[in-house]
Image (tube, rainbow, N blue to C red; front, side, top):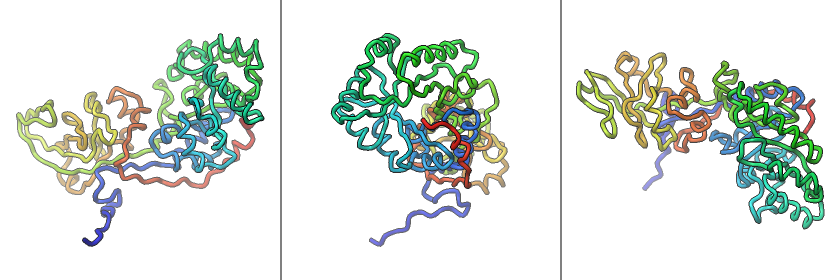
Length: 394
């Protein structure tokens, strides 16, 4: 059988003919968001969080752009993420692994030039033993729990380390860090409480830069910046909080193909469970995107929609694995005849809007976006990373 060509892009150029949906990732917007965040942090180093494959957008494509924009410090969650990231950034870039070393993985950290975040006395002990075996001090970060009760050394652990400094022998402390639980609600008193706890706990540990704020914490002001901030979601355009306009550029556009159109009558139902019923004649369209693509099934529950230009297309019934049905009754037939796709995320509907309708947060929407999309990357314009060059390195 002769080889057949892979489906080529449609005349509109938006995706190959065989793709049900297309995801465009704007690398220039990600770089611009980094520079905006960096400018807000004064003398503090602005790191970049690229865990979960850069929040689903492709760490191999995103991290080099962030480094070009000025990032010199990166954070991932797992060791495997750090190993995959290392070839895509310069040897001088520092990569911190938030979950620290699991038992038996210590040598992989040094082999791949990764820095563990030590979250427990057990991890401290294993890293100390690894350093002793290597006959040299090895770099690491220490995380302290300032009130979130998730990761980090307790106040009792910090007291033990302060009283017995030999427990940190061989550990070159590069960073003392914690994490805010309520930074997206600026008025929450827990923010100041955690800030003050970090100051008190870090003062008892070896001298090193301090870090507390991720994306939303940056917008709490200079008192929360310390020596390093580590934005993640904000790099990818998600709003830091709901109380103020989002100053960040959107970074993704998700478009779904119109697979079929049909007319239905009064009493006809749509989708699994037949949960939506027409009260009169309607024109509807089925789109080639569903929850297997990460377009959350719950997105139909709270007023979810797509957009075709200036026309809002409400989602009808349940979102299926591979398809979603929308109401196109108000769209002129001439507009529909010319259309091949609609926006699921785009100029009229942000990631945060999609999250709101699905009863979740933008983080989940981004990281859930699946692998079936035809992905394209809008390349960044040349950027000047000089603002970062005057900051103290961490």
